[in-house]
Amino acid sequence: MPRHGLASLLKETLDSWFAEEPGLDEADAIALAHHAAGANRYSLTGWKPPVLPALRRDQLWHTAFTQTEKALASAAAEGQADATGSLESNALDAAASGSKEEESQDPPPLWENVEGLPSVKVKTPAANYFSKDIADSNESAMKPLFGCKCGAQDWRPAPSHPSITFRKTFLDENPDFGEHAAKLHVNLVNTKTKKIQWDASYDLQRFRRPGAPPELTETMPAIPQSGKQLRFLTFCPDEPSEYEMQIDALDANDEKLFYFKDQVSRYTAQPARITCPHSQD
Image (cartoon, rainbow, N blue to C red; front, side, top):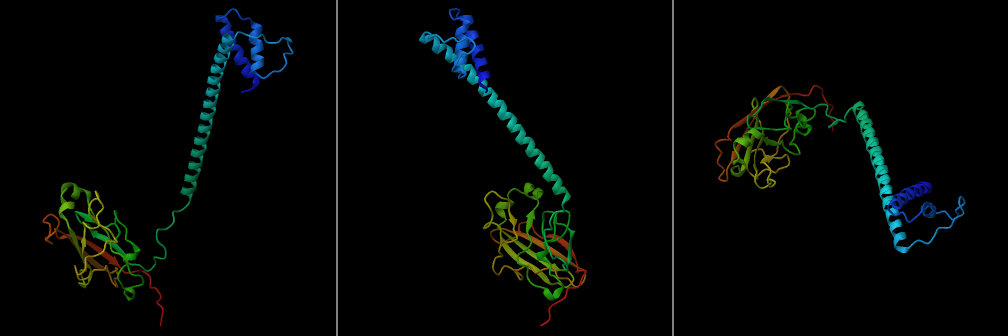
């Protein structure tokens, strides 16, 4: 606060005090105000401040500086509020500018170099489960890792397997499923060639997170010797093909749970539309 502003505030404070203490005159107030503002000379009057009684002088300064401190605190709060408002305004402007820039740019592709992959789509979804990455649908998208590139000459097991998620409606209707379902057996077959693409069982309890619903994650290992094709074979159709996947939940005795057995979903696969060049030996 400027010195002249502080002196004015002190004078107002002392004036209010003199209204209650008529024993002090106006000259005392002016002198004390100038003294508090840091003035060394009293050029207007040439008057020197009197020595006031100790008790009264202490009371005067206490009252004056208490109100001054409140005024300064109020000014600081207002300045902080203005600064905060300015920062928030700048942040909002920056966010809006960033949003406009993001809208003007195309999102980066999730996968690159996907030419030559087959097209796999969900034909018949299952009532009680779905796979979010085995095929394309309104609730899933085929992961490129699950299709062989450039035809059957490159047919091999995928580095992982599709995931299986139990529908929330099913879990809500069967709250004991997570307790009773010890394993999950998956069987995927080409309905035309009868080629087994995937046949394995998985331990749902061993890798389940505490409090989480049961599910088959793509990196969960198969139980050894639990099926005929433990590693998922990629989709590699050389002609339009259909596949059927059957899933069974097993209890601790490897018996199928009566309310989750023979759960079937179906898929279609189209060969890649382009022919990829192959290296020659």
